[in-house]
Structures are given as structure tokens and as C-alpha cells.
Amino acid sequence: MTATELPRNEPTAQSAWTVVGTRHKGIVTHLAVLARNVRHLRYGNRVPVYHMGPPLTSLEPEVVGNEDVPEGAAEDNPASSEITAHVAARLEDLGDADREGMRRWHRKISVFFPAATRPPRPRPRPGAEREWAHYFEQTRYIAHPAFKVEEDPVSGIKKFHRYSCVGFVTECYQSTAVDQVLTDSSRASFPRIDQAMVERLFVPPTLRLTEEIAESINLTGNGPWPVALPGYVMRAFTRTDEEIRNHAYHPSVEDIDFLGAE
Image (cartoon, rainbow, N blue to C red; front, side, top):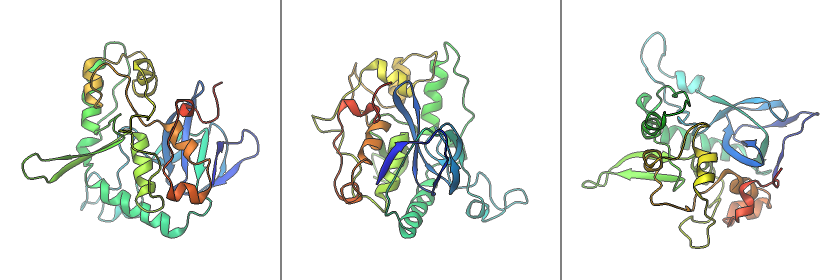
């Protein structure tokens, strides 16, 4: 196992499906998985990733069967995004079968995220809370729980999936390599965060956690809320491979930044 801040001088090599994260002012604020092998990675580099941005990076092409996006385009050139990487975590014994299982999982869930769920990102200007609430709903972004399946109340058929960045990463690993990354956030002892922390982690700068935004990311009431955070996942990966694979990690509030506050 390894979970650490990326080197600032001598670069390191990281393989596809390694967990990478962005860190800001003492808090791990976002998680993703590497979309391909990266040979020279330093603190602050931009890297290709799959993640719930939002929107989710889908392996389903927006259009198929034409000259511009032929059949199989997603297979040959899977879409990815980029983030600034400050921290990384991985299983040392992660094998090719694990990675292939993660890719199959990603392709399977991508059908729940058609092109309509990948609209342009609004500008985070003051007073744009309603616009962002609509954007979160369109992209099927969620804060709590980290992953949720919406079903038709009559037929019980799965309509769509919702993820936070944490939900995307943990479900990806739980699809093949890990039994359960974190303990269930419904447990009474799961740490809770207040409105200020929700705004810091989930709401763009200059915006407030309005009732509309809170509802759009599935937060009800006045808080605090038992939200699974990126730092919790990074802390989970500081354990041995055997522990990571077989025993869910129960986070504490101090794990908001697994490296310690700046």
C-alpha cells in the first residue's frame, strides 16, 4: 500500500487506476483515478483521469456510428479529463485483472450517463446558485451518500446512478479489488461536517450552500451531515494491502486531510 503526497522534485511513476487527489489549504478536496500510466509525475502536475468531476467521465461516446465518432471510438480512445494532482494512493499488489475489472465496471456504469448528463460547466459567479443546482442535478452529482441508485418507484427498474468524487473512486475499487473502502456513512459514529465544510468541498467559490444546492446534492436539514470525504479514502489507503482489501476503514474527523492540516 501507499498513500502520500507526490514528490515536488524527483518525479515518480504511477500506473493507471491509481487514486490521485487534489489538495487545497490543508484539505484533500477531490479524488479521481489515473486514466493511463504516467511515467513522470510531480506535485502539481496535470494528469489524465476518470472521475466524477462533475460531470462523470464516461466511456460511452456522445455519438456513435458516424464519420466523426465511429463505432469503437470509446474503446480505442476512452474519454478522460484532467486534474491537478497533489496526492496519490494505490494498492501495491493491484494486478492486471483488477484493472481490467475496473475498466469493465466503468464501461458498465457509463450507460447510465448519456451525453445529456455532461452539459457545459457554469461559471462560478456570485448569484449563480440556482444555475449550479441545476447543473448538479443534470450531471447526477451527489454529496451524500457517496453513491446512490435511483429506481423507478413502481417498476423498481434502475433509472440512473449518482456519485460524488469519493463514490466514483470507492465504487470503482469495490467493483473488483476491495470489499469495502469505508464503513457505511449511516453509522452513528461516522464523522459529520457542517455547512461551512460542505461549502468548502462541494460548492464553487463565491457561491453559498443555498437550499436549492443542498437539495440538488441530496443534503436535507440543517446538518451536520455524515458525508464521505476524499481525505477519508486517502487515509484508508495508508494501511496494508490486506487491510485495504478486506476491512473497511472507519474514518475520524481528523482524516479530512490525511497528511495533517497546513
